Image (tube, rainbow, N blue to C red):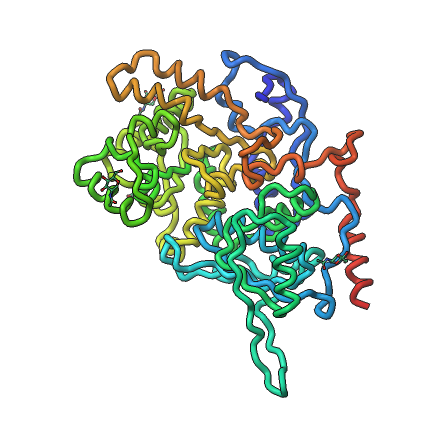
Length: 498
Ligand SMILES: *[C@@H]1O[C@H](CO)[C@@H](O)[C@H](O)[C@H]1NC(C)=O
Ligand SMILES: *[C@@H]1O[C@H](CO)[C@@H](O)[C@H](O)[C@H]1NC(C)=O
Ligand SMILES: *[C@@H]1O[C@H](CO)[C@@H](O)[C@H](O)[C@H]1NC(C)=O
Ligand SMILES: *[C@@H]1O[C@H](CO)[C@@H](O)[C@H](O)[C@H]1NC(C)=O
């Protein structure tokens, strides 16, 4: 779907700073529990040559859809302490985004099992060498409160009294199968939790199937991901300060670059580096990944190589973005140094990152997970987001899903495989007509408009249709819940407590 160019569209889709800050305030306060509104606009179709790149600064056509993750069917309150089947502990490994989807899964698992969830543990020994736990990154009271109609959450496994002595309930350790189906939790895991009183699921990344038949459980995932999981106020403040600064002269674009040591070593795309750099990459590869012979040209042609900063610059420029565009770069340490960033910076001089745009104070408390969290928020708030490397539950994938939910905000997703022959030709000295070729690939894109999730697209990248609804539709499954859904849930919750 492409943006229409009618004057009505232009008028109605103008996104001024006021609207943004209302949205940010809502995010911060967590008041968009029910639905996050996005303007309802019918789209006209336009051909590639009609397309004006400035259209992309606006959100995509919602086509009557709005984000909504409130229950649409009977949704009983979670079991009370005495009714609970036991306690579920989870250890979420991986980086920020992998942990984030693991937390969503943990809430769903606790719900499925009528169990009490212990505040998820975030693996601190991961790549980022960071000591942050859940309480350092996320707003815990908000998390517990937002999910009160869904699961009971406690800070730790309680002490029990056995033979007159108080002791901590030992959680039975289980390594669940990868992408375990709901039935596994309803049988194997349930049996264990009933037997032991508590289970410890570790590791817990990708341990619940992404595709679940029950749309109510999928909506619960969205409630966790887009409403309950709110970063702590210092992270939110830092992020909105950065977004505010970048937007002071108008809109800005964020780019997630995954041109980092671990990713390059993993992808095995090393030929473009100096012998010394290649040595570092090969060593890292040997230490962390299985021994496979990877041929650069083959990897590149199937779209497995992360885009270089220069390639990203060429894409953005070919699409017609002006060289004064403000760009926020979300990335860890870029590998290969200035040699790779210089060409990009020459094309787009107004390039910023969290340390160049933030204050000194920011630097101190934005390492590791917290720094990732700031990058995540700034990318979420940006007018245009450009992911350059995607993979299961990585940063870019989750952001695409979040931006879709947060009002169909523009995402420009380069098709690396389609672009690869163009860049290969350029590397071999055949550059003529490359800009037009890039445009042909790039404008064949949805740019963050609603579209049905198609396997293997991840639920965390696209929660449409489950977490979106329409006000006026004959299709009951897509019908928005009534406005008083919260009151209904609250009444049921109160009744339960009496
Ligand atoms: C959970 O509780 C509901 C009633 O609230 C019940 O219908 C369901 O069978 C229970 N499931 C398990 C696994 O205990
Ligand atoms: C990796 O595999 C290649 C052949 O595929 C072999 O020549 C090489 O010795 C292997 N290296 C290690 C460290 O096992
Ligand atoms: C940016 O584009 C303008 C023309 O629109 C040109 O005059 C200027 O030199 C460019 N700046 C850079 C840094 O490329
Ligand atoms: C951020 O930008 C500054 C200034 O351009 C640069 O010196 C620094 O290396 C960048 N940091 C990262 C992590 O890219």
